[in-house]
Length: 68
Image 1 (cartoon, rainbow, N blue to C red):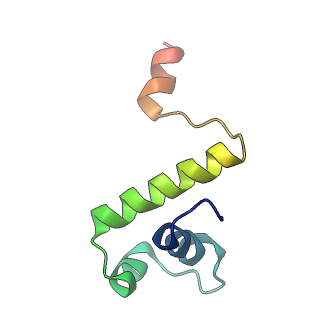
Image 2 (image 1 turned 90 degrees about the vertical axis):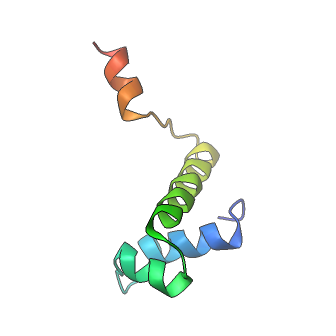
């Protein structure tokens, strides 16, 4: 989590780690972010965490091309 920016950390904490289980649209409003910006930040943060944990990340289209 230390590799994330403060906004990315807040998005991940509120999306996955809080006990309240808030929906994304509620977190967007609380943070003053648009839906598209929120999803972009969330995606970037998840990619950073996956790389730090050495978890492979594939795009759906890429995986489909591999197996077709």
